[in-house]
Image (cartoon, rainbow, N blue to C red; front, side, top):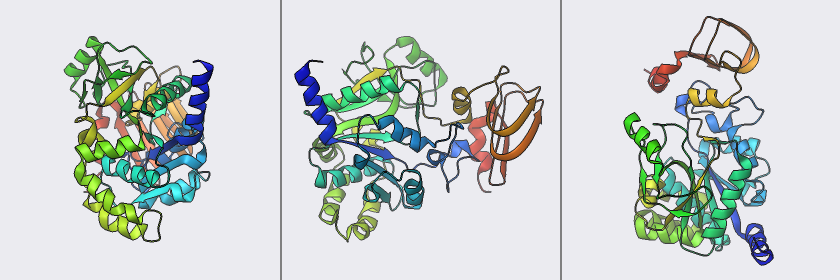
Length: 362
């Protein structure tokens, strides 16, 4: 990067970058550690001393001052956000009166930011993902911010797949190299195993990390074109933003938004979508098996989060008992053992897709 470009980019980062963390999910596949009262983004899933939302903030610190971090979450989680992220201004914690999926959430935060920062360049990111290759991640987001700053473009992050994963959505591209901004051909839903294997063999499909970078004017423009109903609700809300009447107006108007993801509302309709492929060692930590694969493992393939946990003749198991003073477990092969608040799960890893059903109130 030449000196002039570097200076321009420093000014871009210093003055206009905002990071919006989307933190409203409940992470039901990680029950009992993740519950509707304290979902996975607010817990130390990996036993590293920080929750996933705290790790997300740490990941973006090189890109943005804490005063320009925002969190959009359920009204029931605002106290958790304040407790875990005290450096984020309280007025930057936006509480949805009810869950309406990611499109209304992104629209509200954008209209809110644009009301006082019309030139903002905004990163929207989930709160509950893991990225181990942080230096590469920082470079990817910088490139995305530079690309989106002065054009009507949405830049997303595509993770180079390492296996035929059926739990992630995919992004189709055409011959893209890592680190290069390239046009998106299409977004694909979570595939079956045969389709996932075909995607991996093809080499032109990326995992969709759910991270979007675009400037505030582009966000507004894209919503007006492809989700005008949500844009109309936000326009009605706009006069109340940053006034004493904002909360009352939000409670009245936000539930009128269509309940829809940003992928369906905008991404799958717009021709202005780009992606940067990257090798990030990324995971959405959406299942116990994904937690196990990223937690440290012993010689027998067991991952343990907790204190005095003693395993005998156990193999390939995930044990998550951070609040248990002492546990002795013998003879398990390929199991999940997890406890929180008096709720205990013992389940074969192979059957973890049934955890939502097993834990549902009957």
